[in-house]
Length: 370
Image 1 (cartoon, one colour):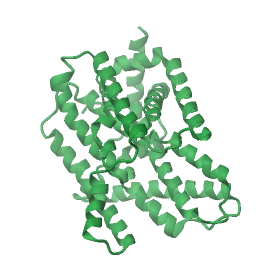
Image 2: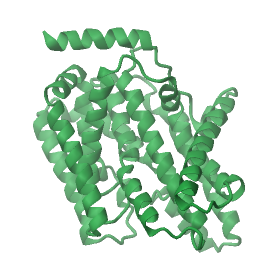
Image 3: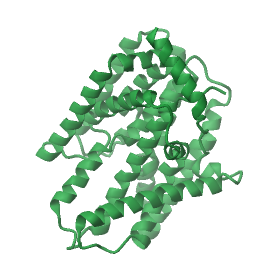
Image 4: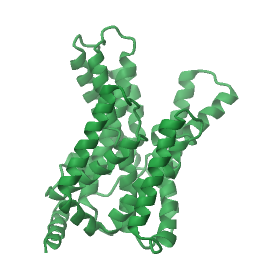
């Protein structure tokens, strides 16, 4: 069994936290919608800006999935490569998707056949529920097979990266600026994420060279991250561009620079906090299950409105995150005690052996300095 990359645990945990807090803020906004006590427009604007800055969550997950795949299987894939992922990734996507759809149907009351068909399209084709990234990852599995057989040996990394990033940005440009309102499920096609795929593929395949790159260009990476984050803030505060979704063009640059920065930071850490490792191990289940706990919290458990809006928002978000994350982890843990449990919310990830990884990172950095 090949060793795990410590930095991936950090990226995966932070991406998971970002997704949870994005949805927690949405839950907070729905909870106080129309409530006269919650009237600070500055607070609402600040929460919206925070959501924009957290939009790296899903793209980071997509980046991580291909990085791990390329590092492990950059020349060939084992037997039952797709079958195993169908069982423990795609089946949970279908199960949680149908459960989510049934909850929405119950909340809506009676629905016509046409409305039910539209809801099915909305969930499983257009990807308008939190598990949509799984469909993208499955396209990446197929693309990975195609890539290692027909692309990587025929074209240079520079050419592939240049073309794929250009295609990705042009594709997103059309749907961001030319035709933003469309029935076509543009975010579900691999073209909306192809740049993440190729960058992650080469970073994973040439892992040691990637670490050298991070050390050599650490200041440029940090500067790029600061500039892109500042541009997100400026565009949102100025009102020039206030769309809140992960398919924005600037989110692409922001996410890649953040991934590189966090990767570099991760290489400098001797160990990771156990809570980060635990969240990373259960991230797939948290991603799928946390909306159910947010729904329960908003309807049943959230605290009464506090006179101070800022204090209420802080308390709401902290409790929403803690309850949804801990509830998801506990649920996945219990489900995995049963054979069929992994088909509902996925399997628990492999643990990280910190002492072994510490030695491995030290050896890696020594090689880079020679």
